[in-house]
Image 1 (cartoon, rainbow, N blue to C red):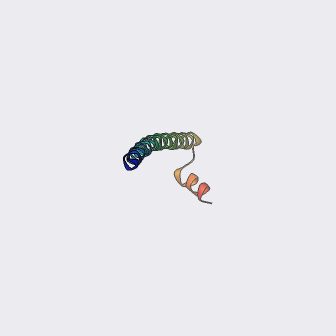
Image 2 (cartoon, rainbow, N blue to C red):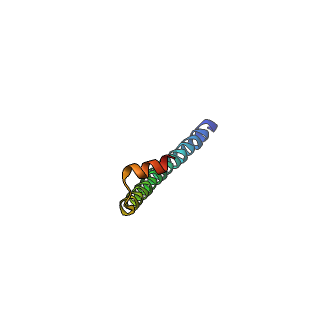
Image 3 (cartoon, one colour):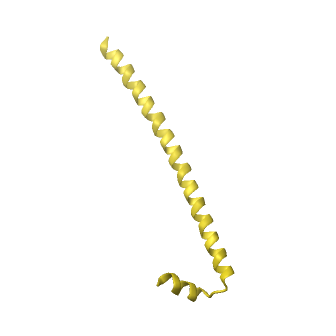
Length: 66
């Protein structure tokens, strides 16, 4: 009978791990999406600043490469 009790505990523990894994996967996807969005917004901001600067691509590239 102890084996049956232990089997139930193991199954509950597996279910708990699976729920935690699903929550982790969901949170990881959300984090990646937010980081990708942030990266895109920063790139758009940089592009806008470059366009407003009046500088050529070569001037800007030389400046940031120095």
